[in-house]
Image (tube, rainbow over all chains, first blue to last red; front, side):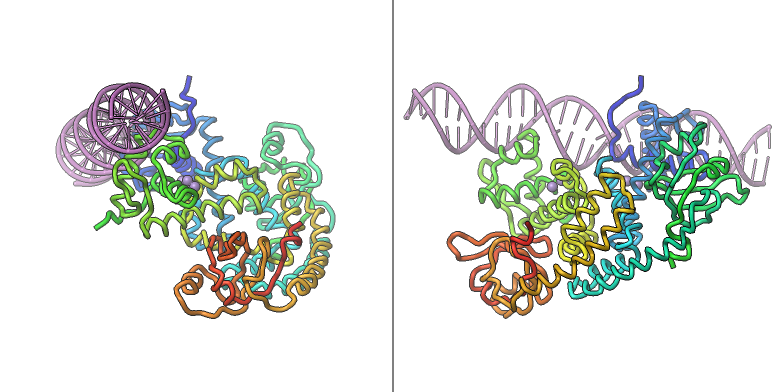
Length: 258
Length: 258
DNA sequence: CAAAAATGTTTGGCTGGACAAACAATTTTA
DNA sequence: TAAAATTGTTTGTCCAGCCAAACATTTTTG
Ligand SMILES: [Mn+2]
Ligand SMILES: [Mn+2]
Ligand SMILES: [Mn+2]
Ligand SMILES: [Mn+2]
């Protein structure tokens, strides 16, 4: 049976890197892992043995590395953690992208799942609440970079009133429920109804796509056979047939985001 | 000359612990450090040598440990980092105190000063912005723990309107500028004027106590010779004579915070 | 004050994670 | 296909941190 002990921060980074490489090139080479992590190849070989012993990767000397199901799952979680943290730093705290990247990759080893979920919800909140949105983000940005005069907050009230207007605009944007498949890249929506059934739908439900959830369409495949969406910080692939069984209310279209 | 390399996470924890012990008991004993950190005493001896080599602590075998000026400064920064992060987790994300504590003590080694300052401002923002405040925190808490129905945000607008009232109440609370020394524990205020001069005032300016800064009175010494305040996440000791030279507008009194 | 208890240090041993260099396999090139 | 270049592995070495046990010092107690 595989070694059950928790991953070390170093191991987490290796697994995350492998996950990303596999996602990109469907296979990970020792050299690539070493390059990405800025580490000697011999160190990689060592790390691979450890991850293999934990049943997270398929590893045979001199051949390519792939992920086991367990590894896939764990790796996905790690990549998500990284991304959610970076999003938080950039979107909410207006930190420089490179700094955000660096800090996120250190923080990711320090936040427990519990805290992660809160953070996901919080970033979502900032993204969605009518009182929040872009105007609000600007407020914080100003507040942060200029040292924070609270007189600025008088403007908050104005922005807040505007938000009722934006809510109205939203109602227009919505224009009644649609099928997820009808949306375009950049659209944000809320799920109103899901026709369950089938493994694809089950996977989506597990990924948090259910009544009330918010999601964003990231891209539609050129072949029009599936779309990529982001929900609860996860990137999910939704096959066309599934996207046609999910009803949503559009809350913000690509153009609303400037 | 002292070893100039950066502290390791472990060393940061040792220094932070020593800082806190010195603050409490004005001196740190090996045993106490070991107990607090859940570590064997022999490990502490080793760590002390490292910190001593970096010129951060005064260390003679078999005698008490104290901080050098450099160590004091660094230690204070670390304790602050820890605290700001914990505050963020608890106040903004509504994470359980123990979880917050644990995660903060891991995250603190991962955030750069830049990000820290953003976070301080952000927590301050959440604490101060009339659009924010307690009502808002409740919103997020609900949003986070209940999975986030955005319909809840209709209430946001109501809360927002209330915030103009709270702004009005604020004006009353203010009642014109006062001397910092006249405030009580729990009062929050904004600095309007500072009579500079003297080392105590200089230290406070460096600590961020200047026109426009917000601060909170934490306690007034029983002897009435100084008060402790919190500004920009720092805990500062303000001697009476200094507190009499700082003019402030009260923005929220202890009672306003329930 | 001497014995006992508590506290602190040294030494040796362990692990995880990194590197360099020598070696082995695989892929590319001529 | 043989040589050269690239990629991957093994081995030996180092360093940070931790512990346990033996030893040293200081403090408490009878
Ligand atoms: Mn990382
Ligand atoms: Mn990462
Ligand atoms: Mn820590
Ligand atoms: Mn800490």
